[in-house]
Image (cartoon, rainbow, N blue to C red):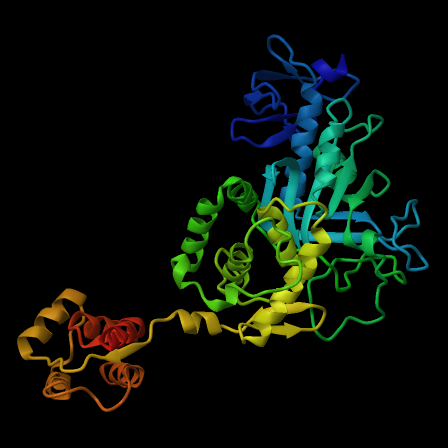
Length: 462
């Protein structure tokens, strides 16, 4: 049968997917089956396209699995796909069909994931496009999984399904590329924020660029991209979904331990900003301090975010909570409300800046607050031998012309300026990093952190 013996694509010795029709007759190579890994040979009938065939026993549905693998390879290497338009002529949400339908152009970079796991669900293709995350499912007849289709749709991410019909005569990579990348009638949006919210395309792009989707221009034949505000999450590495699933299964002490690592503080030293009373604060099924510390670490402190200073939407934070906590009941709406009110409170406290379209951006105050504030230690002095020893231990050689001045500063007290001002000036004079100056002062026990300073004063009171 063709599905068993005639295979259009195979892997060569370099691991690349090639088609039998595109191979040259005089180039010796070894080929293996994508499905079972066994050796294949090339057959070249006189009046039909060349194909691969198992050298020994044939595996079941080898051609289908090879076609699917080749389709995913085309998506990863091509970095774009055309999809059906999301809006009808009247601006209503809903995919359009037919030859006259306009197209959506989705593009991505190198960072894609094939056959990956997102929140416990296996997906074919995951990429970050101009409009946010995108899932693509490649549907091949005879190996289509209906349960997987439902599970992928339930993820809530923009999902495009590409069907490779049985009637298509696919013998070359170019044939498959035409179906996978260029075709429209064989594609359908399983889920997309535009379809769910019915957003209309604006006549002109807003002055403030926010996360959006690539939509077709209704007045042109060629595909174009217009940025419109959409409730889509920002990029989350596919590998983090497994981490979220593991975190969700941890008991409360385990969750606290993880959050302590993200914030770099034990739970008894967490800021007051992670204990704010808001509406629907029990929507995550845990104490508010836990989920608020999670949001604070992720979106204020920037733990685990490469773009830690970038703006984000309320929906992004809510999806983060939904991925990490077993919400009680139908708590998605409650989570959204609690998240929004909490972010608003963080804005009032100066940790976030609220932008248009329910967007927020970290102000950087947390990193400034997290940096230890240093004070001079009263009564400490510095002599030549101590300076030489401390300089050696921290690998900071003080210039000879500055040694005497530094010793005079601490001969009977400390500089009249604050630690930060002294460090900044001494760093400028010696042309050395500020961290090196701080390391030297710490090693010589000339400075101490604010917490230590306060604790000693409080200790004396009692």
